[in-house]
Amino acid sequence: MKKMLILLFTVPFCFLAAAQDMTDLVKKVKTKLDQVNDYEATGVLKTDIVFIKAPVSKIKVYFKKPDKFRLKKDGGISILPRGGVSVTVTNIVDIASFVALAAGESTVDGYPVKIVKVLPSDENNEIVLATLYIDEKNVLVRRATITTRENGTYDVSLSYGSYSNYGLPDKVVFSFNTKDYKLPKGITLEFDDDVKSSDMDKLKNKKGKVEITYSSYIINKGIDDSVFK
Amino acid sequence: MWKLLQIELYKIFRRPRTYIAFGTIAALIIILQVGLKLDGQEYLDFMLNSLSKFDVSGTVLNGYMVCYVTLQMLLINVPLLVTLIAGDMISGEANMGTLRFMLGKPYSRSQILIAKFLAASIYTFLLLIWLAIFALLLNLVIFGTGDLMIFKSSYLVIINHDDIFWRYMGAFCFAFLSMTTVAAVGFLLSIFAENSIGPIVGTMSVIIFFTVISTLNIPMYNVIKPFLFVTHMNVWKEFFDQKADAHNVGIPGTLQNPQRIINSALVLLAHIVGLVSLAVYIFKKKDILS
Image 1 (cartoon, each protein chain N blue to C red):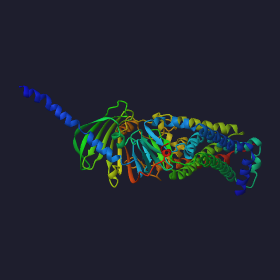
Image 2: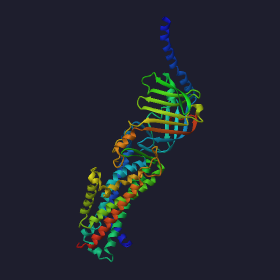
Image 3: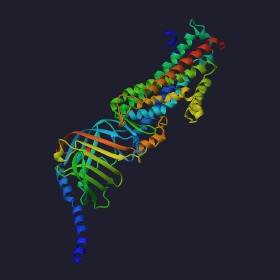
Image 4: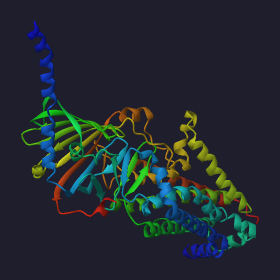
């Protein structure tokens, strides 16, 4: 009877301990990304947001450790969801203190992945919860769902190519819900288009997407801080 | 006919009041430019306040943007400046007592009237060229170029910097059509008066009256709205909207609603032809006593 009771209490704890032990995998991803101190990437930005009509544009993206990020469009205007695009996988794995819990297995784009829930220990961290879909074999994050304190929840899908050795994606797709976003009427005295408000409400429940396709990276060549101002 | 047109243009540009319009436009644009140059960031912050959940980067307050803001403000008021001349074309002659003398020339009444209307149209054209120089070219020099971001009532449009200039050219051509329609109204009313105040006030009253009707969202009035010229005067803004593909990606070099621009241009053109023809018809039958 005693043995039965001991078994009953210890087995669940063993499973729990095993479930929580994903920190090493996250650290492996971090080690890979740590090879990159800075990069300058050239790419194409495409926005699919129901209330923004913007053409496809050529962009340059600058990153410098630990968290400097800047997206520039030559002579142009870019509109991106606040915090969304600039919170990279590097930001997640760079969290000083976190708990990484296993949450199962799945496949993303045909690659088997481990699902890992990352919970920052610091209550004031901008990221509240991140679910990472990590390709254990290639040590790459294939997908992430990030819940932030200020900017809501968004999904990030990452596709890799020539720069996968550095953990840098060839294509990143950010998805977010647009229902909370609204534009005020009358700022430019435009009241004359024929879109019915009910149609706009339906459209607002769609997901917004921002897609960046990178064509090249210049890695670890140094970037001046003035670029990020 | 050319000689008649030259005489009419000489008459218009000899009067000091002609230059009031040019001076007013220049003064208003310079005031706006100074304000936006010194305090543009606050205006921009207010405008972008609605995009607080987005990071907007790039030079939003550039020459193209300032020009759009300028046109929105001024194209509402330019009709008044056009009316100052168009409403005076016949009534001014009647007031000075030179109308009978003028009709004694070896030209038909139709020729005289058409020459007068063409002169008023050339004045309108020059006023818009002046507006383009100050509102577009000068703003580009002061504020530089960049993409154009426009807030529509339910969406936002971003147009690439290399896809904007032709849109302004189209918008100015369309504005010319709108202002010439206003000139035609003033010109028609000018036939009935013996001094220019009546036609000027009359034209502005017509514009205000029709504008109020066209902004009322009452089903009964919706039927007549497409036939009112004021409904079509704002269609120049259509040049600043582009088609989007299934993924909301703007397609450069396109117009969202080109048919609306064509339809409105035809309605305005029909108004011009109709109003001038009516003016000629009435004037030919009129007993000229002054």
